[in-house]
Length: 386
View (cartoon, helix red, strand yellow):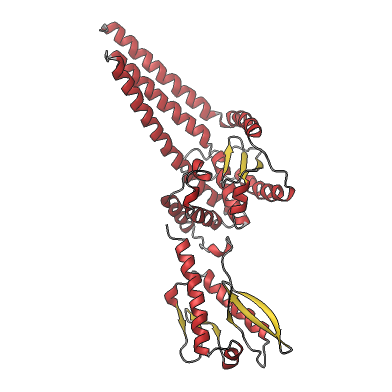
């Protein structure tokens, strides 16, 4: 049993502990740059020991050029922070490629960014790669690691206070152990929550950062959408350090809409598009329009246009329609003239001469072409549902 005097002593010790940790947290926050650079150098040295870096000149040039453009913006512009601190602290950003098949990327404080080989193989454009690199830059630019450590120190402080309070109450050692275990679990849960907040901030910040670059912020969204469709990646790779869920994908999409940015996924991916090829038939050059590996239109030459000119114009109209996120119900077949219509615009009109080259009737050629376009639209829709 504790005396009143000893109870006051324990209380003073608890208050002293709380003040000590609080002061330490304030000192760290007041000198972000110096602490982060020191921490980063030590961490980068360990990373260099642990991983094999790529010496592929072309890949390194690609990653470092994209990274340098984005880092230059982050070192000058204050970007809104949903988590961490928006304080601009210029870092000497470095970018390395890790020779590992995992689809992953990570950063350590002070501007050290690492991209895995597997991620380079997974992205479908420089826009998507820029989205990932911008995400990692925001982790450093918004001082997420320091902020996380500060929160962790606060939780450890709560743990110590609770344990001391339990001891003061005269609880049995078994009860003290139960309190300790329970608070540790609470601490883990809270830290996981902070991780999710940091990831969402890095997503939002990356989109904002890319606005001032020549990279399309939609690249981050298309990368995330495609990755979220790969359940076999859940237990390794980027999912370990970047928990990805439907809410996070939706939040990235909402950020793009908030900034009034058109979500044109085809600009940032290897999306199916209409293409034109030519061949010589009976001494005449004819062009054909293909979509998803299928020939959907072979235009005959007219008085004022060649087959190639008509094919290219049709392909351009089809791609514009796909880029505009046209819906399947907006695609119709003209029953009178023969042809495929989208939102009132003829994508291509099939004349008798065209149909003859395709060995079909105008109606059948139009129906087949429309079905192919609808199949592409359907896959685009499925790829963006979460």
